[in-house]
Length: 152
Length: 152
Length: 152
Image (cartoon, rainbow over all chains, first blue to last red; front, side, top):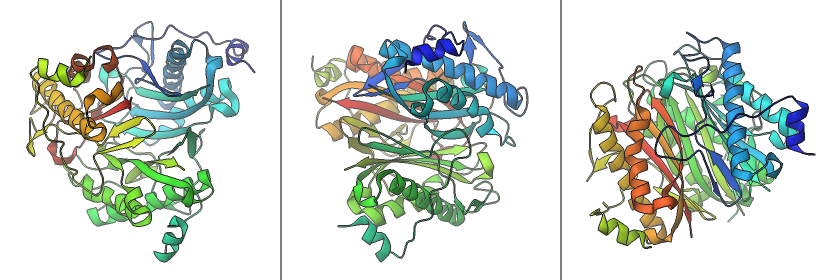
């Protein structure tokens, strides 16, 4: 099973790995653990679906935004490992959702990334998750995601 | 020293490990590190002490909620490792407290889980901790906790 | 290259590692990974720049606060490893910024710690980062930071 081939079968073309917005790097590896920096839902440096879930952004657009941030995370993993085929498994998804105080549908939003990870990696894409409603977010992003992966 | 025996001595019966509320799993292992998904203070799928610290939930009930979420985390670790006796040590507790903007007693709330971990594992239960006041939480939970453990 | 010497060349004297404010410890090691507890911008147990970014605290003071919390994190790493020369590299910075709902300059604030890490460790100080705007913070801190390091 090649995950790179699976991406092609799914018709997914990974974006370029977004560059950092401060004095840091976008992925790091320690032992076999690779973690990304917080990934945002932008495409070519243009923020998609800016705003808060429950106000400017609805749940289905939040799902789409989480998928976009997930694609950016995959691009970081590919840059870190040379090929997604060097991913042994996905370990964790940190899901930070910019939202109103009343919003409660964080799980559905984050499934946009979780579903992507499972569609690409199958059982090796099953991951732990946190889901938090965040008060203020850099760059008006509606979600910020971190993906942890284990390298082969 | 058996941690399973210590649980019995303390009169603690672990719940069944709660199932996920989205497209993810409740624990993952990479190398010797086991991390849980965000654990909530529910018992048999009924949320205990729903609401915000500083408003609907007082600090002592928050402490109780953190203990319940901690028991759910222990149930996840047991499922991951077969037995709590396979825990080498607890590494980290991520403490996310759903609260009002004025609430400041996050440490006391989170001690509900920290005290549990130390009562079960002794010195091997000593862990690092983050304590954050969260704006909006899935399922109206008053706390969400993640536990990291090192496997033997 | 000695990181302890670099500290001296930079005229930096590390504080004593702050003690915990609850039932936990301030650093833990699992394998070669060392993580700190949430570090706050205090000096001798006096909170510096208390309040929220965007209200009581301006961005440049937030930058200074992040640097102070970073120095406390370095003190924890030194306590964990005996000497900063035993750091192989910095892996991750978790940046939690206490702020108003409108604040968006989290990256600039967190650069206060990121710049410190790179000035001390050079390329080995490059790290991944998350940047979140937090609603309520223990002890009125304006930032809370966690540093992950890999031990030699």
